[in-house]
Amino acid sequence: MTGDDAERLWRRNLFALTAAVFIGFTGFTLVMPFLPIYISQMGVTDVGVIAAWTGVILGVTPAMTAVFAPLWGRLADRFGRRLMVARSLFSFIIIMAAMAFATQPWHLFALRVLQGFFAGYGALCLAMAAESAPAGKLAQSIGLVQTAQRLGPALGPVIGALIAGVVGLRATFFVTAVFYAVAFVLVLWMYTEVPTAARASRLASGGAVTFRSALAFENFLLLMAVIFGFQFVDRSFGPILPLFISGMEPQESRAAVVSGVVFSAMACSAALGHHFCAQLLRRWSSRLVISRASLVAAFATLAMGYAPGPVALGLASAIFGLAIGAAMTAAYTAAAANLPESVRATGFGFLTSASLVGIAISPMVAGLLARIGLGAVFFVDAGVLLVLAAIVLRTMGDAVQETTGPLVEDA
Image 1 (cartoon, helix red, strand yellow):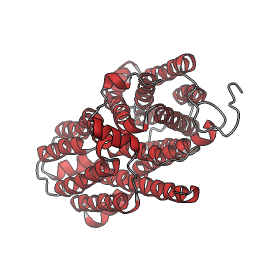
Image 2: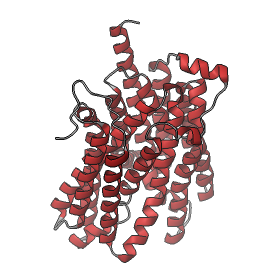
Image 3: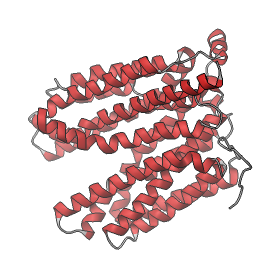
Image 4: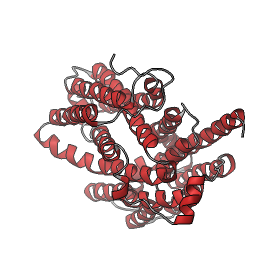
């Protein structure tokens, strides 16, 4: 294969992955934010019961995914990643369509358990993006897929509200199934997976990577902790920011609008951070990008806690999103560079588990801290980010992937 052919293949694969991830993540958020309304339409009237069912239904899928992501990653390394992504997307088509027929909350819970078992295509798509990236394009490939992962959930609720207003909430589940069908076709039709010699060797030997053996890879445990910490901080704002904004905006309707704008600003700026991380990695090592972005995110978090009004809060949240997005992409890029290609999907499965654990426990910890005071959440988050910055700067090796010239160790 010539250099031009390889470049075209990479661009085609990256487009397929980015489009499939964007469509899939958008489809998921078409209906999930409106789950309480859907449960109430089933005849549940007690607000506390609705909230309880919503919590367990939303929480069970990431919990299941955290458990099974390494398994699907291991199978992907052995039998091909496109097959495992197609398996996950196809299952989502069936499960999301089945949710349209649910008549009791436990039906949704059971389907979400099943969804969590088959999930994990996000981590596999990151591994596939890394797999097909030519030299110097690793961070760009991972960053684009992560950008799609951010923008999809940012736009999904808006699109879902419009669709539900036209066809009804129950029928919106069928629309979501169509979204996953499009993503499924894109992966099968456009993504080309060439079996590597390393994978062939693994198939012949039957070897498997365990969590203990994964720890032997450079910086792996550190990067798991970093990714966990970033997700822990990033997801801690959901339970407290609307309450924090209510203190600035006594009018309930205006507070709701401001909350939506702030969350959108954070999501969109994080997408930009994912996208522009590759440029930062051309100048600095991943160690410096992660540590410096963590410092910026820590100070932005403190600025959010001390924000005198909505404008300052929105600006600080945008800076936070930009920094956390760049740091997250740099962490996954460093992991991809240090993991052998033959076990990259397995490694990304473990990283995804760390990420999902952070997502799962963050709202609970934030809720407990909020009992002390809303400001406590901002202070703890800033402390976590400062500790991560210090540990990365002190202990992480200088894994540099995207350099085109001499490294800038200090600037």
